[in-house]
Length: 118
Image (cartoon, rainbow, N blue to C red; front, side, top):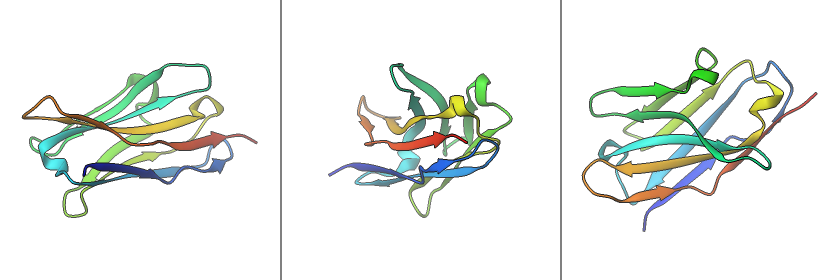
């Protein structure tokens, strides 16, 4: 059974940092492009970042470039989203999504809440 489990969300103040984790089971992240999305209250689910370990390809959405970075630990089957200099507009539920490189399989995690507020 495939599972993506996000963690690391919290209530923080503006300017602080968080690191989100997406732990995969039932699949190897090296066979997938792993993405982070976020959904603010009343908003759509928006792309934030992606990483493909094979080929060392990563992408960061322009609005968070310079503050957010994506990385992966193949041995731990985990993808991270490091978020620095957080702003109130970063408040959202953050989701992990895995897209198979070889098939049309797509998997989503359940999300983790990030709230940035003073």
